[in-house]
Length: 131
Image 1: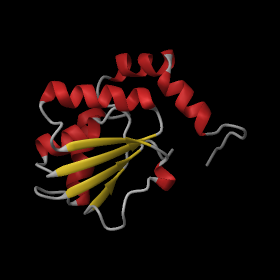
Image 2: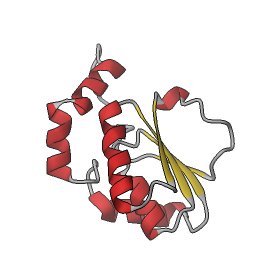
Image 3: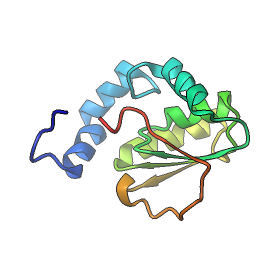
Image 4: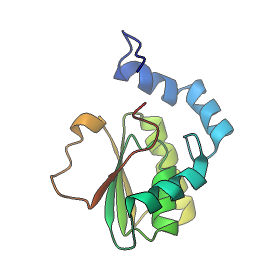
């Protein structure tokens, strides 16, 4: 695995919260990861995610994955944690626009110390953020 020294959470937040993040959103749409919605649906199927479950999405970006799970897998609720306030703002707006705010909640925070209570979800979701 490759790594680049000297890059921290502030650097990541600056990229996704600035013009480069806007470019990613324009290029990739609502799914800020390679493979888009089809990849999310395939992963959900393989992971056995089904109707009525509660999930947490770590490094959720603008919440595209959560919206897919709520809409197409009938997941009961999702909480997304993302380091970048701009991503959270985009996600909250998308959820309001799509009528999903009652089932999807966002938190600005570090995925490695989210503050969420133990056992508050049936599954943890994450796409591409871990690379």
